[in-house]
Image (cartoon, rainbow, N blue to C red):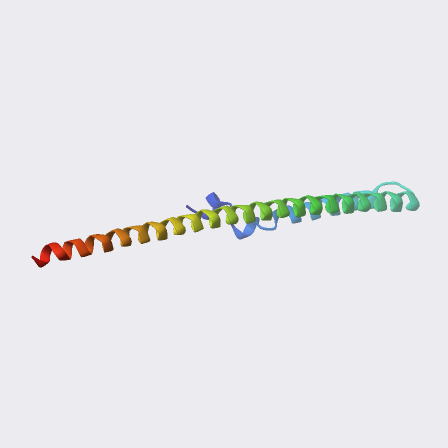
Length: 116
């Protein structure tokens, strides 16, 4: 498997942020050269900047919420696995002790049979 199949090459790591940065700069340049009065242009730029900031805040909140959900899922999975492992170990200990007691009961009877 090469780097193009895995999708984890170094060249693709910052593609989305660079695309967004380029788009933002293109919009700003277009507005600067558009025939608008200065006040209207500043107002439009301010509005677009606020919209962008609001979008980023919403995205941050969504990512944070998903991360917390994944963390909770992970904790639940670990707890279930821990409980299952504990039950398996306890069952193994009980089986070992039961077999040990059975072997100890058989040992004296075998010793007395071999003594004669």
